[in-house]
Image (tube, rainbow, N blue to C red):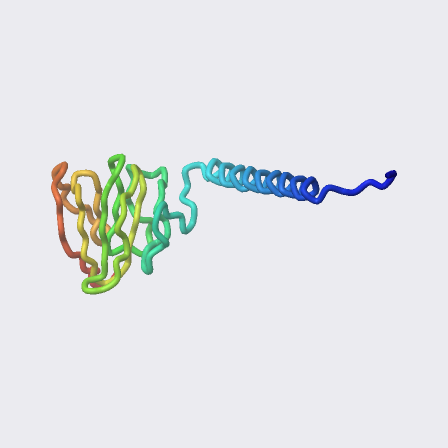
Length: 160
């Protein structure tokens, strides 16, 4: 009569509550770290940052808002990309592939986001050419009309 038996269901419930608390704490820590990382960049791109696709071979890995929308000049001695895209609208649909080969990008860029590729030859499709500033071998390509679909190929300039 004086013996006390422990309740196995009570212990299991306590263990589940403890596990849930630990999981919630881990989620808060991961979220806080991501928030502080994104706030601490001061508008500089995060290396390898990409909203929905892994970094493509030949891409600079600097897709993201560079905070440098108006200045597209290349520093002296810097390698000039075969093609560079700078999104000028809220959404800029861009498709890039190696002719007859790998798709390097098929996604929407966001305002200020940039992507650069260095392959010898590329096929490009812009679903709305009026939203994207395009530099071919460092030189601006004529802007398209809003809503205009453009398809073109770009070849690396000799000596670059």
